[in-house]
Length: 135
Image (cartoon, rainbow, N blue to C red):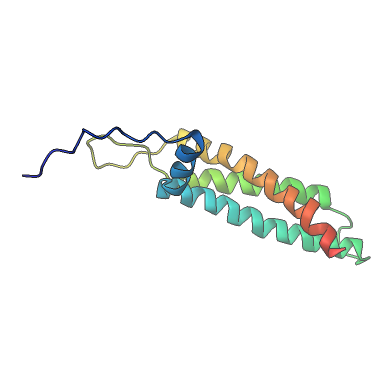
């Protein structure tokens, strides 16, 4: 038998920032995988958009003309869609005592709403920070 924990010492209270840092370091693996997959898709598509934007600004004549608005719409749709699908597949709902894996639309909604700020922040970083460096 193990000895009961020593309760004579007071429990150290963490600050708000300390609690958030600990939560950040110990995030659940499926959630980290879902967020990183959305981030990876957003970065790859943003690099493609930057290449297209730089090519147009340097006077390249590409088939179809200037389709930057369509490229942004496609970027948002693909990032949000892939975020929803990957989260649906990777993040199961808690099952309690059972061993079955349950998924439903809430898993996909979680991925969708997690991908919204990722898509926005990656595109803002690409257009406002990286793009001026390539000019």
